[in-house]
Each structure stands twice: as C-alpha cells, then as structure tokens.
Amino acid sequence: MGIHRIGLVVPSSNVTVETEMPTLLNRHADEQFSFHSSRMRMQAVSPEQLRAMNAQRERCILELGDAGVDAILYACLVALMSVGPGEHQRVEGLVAEQLAAGGSDAVVRSSAGALVEALHAIDAKRIVLVTPYMRPLAEQVVAYIEAEGIQVSDWRALEVADNAEVGCIPGDRVMDAARSLDRAGVDALVISACVQMPSLDLVQAAEDEFELPVLSAATAGVYSLLRALGLPVDIPGAGGLLRADAPAAALQ
Image (cartoon, rainbow, N blue to C red):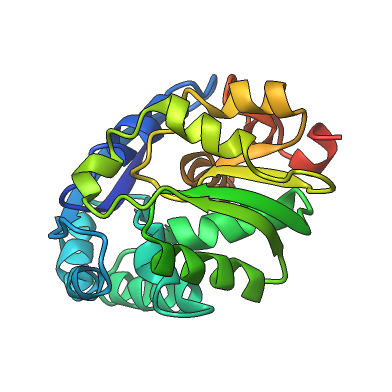
C-alpha cells in the first residue's frame, strides 16, 4: 500500500486545516497519507486581502507540483465564494490545466467545491450554517450556496475579521450559535463554513445533539478528496458524511 500525497494550498494565517485534515484522513483504516502545504499571504478576512491571496495561487501550485502530490485541495472556502457563483469550478479547472502543463495528473478540489459536493451527496435541499466571517462576506457565502440550488434557511456570522483569531474561536461559541438557529425542516447543518474555524471536535457531538446531518468545511474536504482519489469513504467519529460511501443512505 502506497502513501497518498495530499497538497494543501492554505492562507498563511491558517493553522487549522493542517491539523484537522491530517487528523481525519489518518483515521482511515486502509490507506496512508502525507501532507504538503504551500501558503498564500493573508491575515485579515477582507475582500482586498482575499483578492491578493488568490493572486498567489500559481506560485503555490508550482511548489506542490514539484512535490509530486496525488491531489490538491485549495483550502480557503471564502476566497472563492466571495468572487461569485461557480468560482470553484473555474479555479479548479485553471489549477488542473497548470498541473497538466507541468506533467502532473493530480486531482484538484477546493473547499468551496467540496462543501457543495458534500451537500448534494447527502441530498440536502435546505440547510442552516455557522460562519466566522463578517456579515458582508457571510452573505456572499450564503448567496454562493443558494446559487448551487441549496436553500440556506438560517445562518449565523460570528464576525471575526482577524484570520488568526478565527483559528481560536471556542467550540462553545460555535455550538451556541448552532443552537440558536431555526433548524425546523432542514436537511443538514454546516457547523463551520470555513476551514480555519475549528470544528473537528464538534461535528459528531452536534450530529448527536441535533439529530440531523452535520458537516463542516473540513469533513466535506476529506469526503471530496477521498472520492476524487477513488478511495473508500469511511472515517469514524466525524459525522455521517464520512461513515460510508453512500452518505445519503447512511444518514437516513
């Protein structure tokens, strides 16, 4: 059994994705993974800094291509969703073209696309979510998801602008925000629509408490990577999305 090399493109101030993604994937019973990151400079979650960060993408992809990775995750959800509907498809396509030009056939996913993919996989038509963003950016995230045919019936923005502080948001604060949502008639809760806001310890607990499917940007990213690599989806302790290869059936 070989080791699957996972490339992560992350904001420079992100300290969460490189913790949660390895923790999740290293729970896989049958596969092994290594993790290789390239960083884009970004401190504040603002439109200006997000645009400047996205401009560094090509350099990051070159670095990860040199590492011979098998898959790349563009791990900043709001950087793509703030641009406008369908941006994940455009960026994933550009990254794949750049890799192919360098002779790499690595599969490419993004946190933005992974969340959309995971919600469709569990047939979620109506959801609620928690974000760490300032309200204007949170509204863009909501609009992006709704453009994918998924209704966001209620949401909370914790309004933390400093990305380093996002990585320190207490779980109790996130859970309190989730408890305040109107969850009547919804198909799923996205407890963290951000790979920097810690959520790994919350997903299973929230699913047990609220008795509905709960996912995060991190669990959606793992789901998407495993599917893209053609590997079984079965990660314990991280919610129903990752319990089986057919999550819609597993979550009934």
